[in-house]
Length: 120
Figure 1: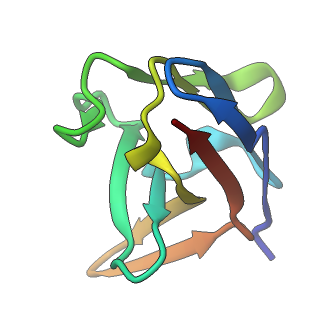
Figure 2 (figure 1 turned 180 degrees about the vertical axis):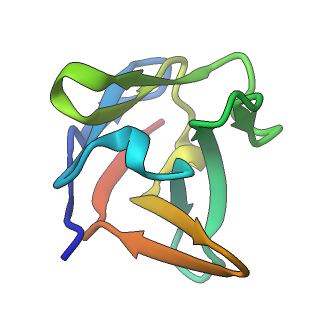
């Protein structure tokens, strides 16, 4: 059973920073990709940043490019999302996702979500 544990959310003023962490129950390199998604009230869940383990390029949504950085820590099986220059529109519940691709099937695992609130 794969478990993802998120931490690091909270309340911050506009222009501030937060770092989210997603710790997996298995080795992070056992997944094909781990990413962060967010969902604001009344909106669909959207991808924020994704890191792959097959040598691909990290993905960032246009809205966060230059402000957010995703990184891997193999020692503690954790993927971090460093969020700088936060804006009120970054307010959302942030979810960690881990994906495994096995043949033609993809398996997605989700964390419980962590609230990020940016005040103006």
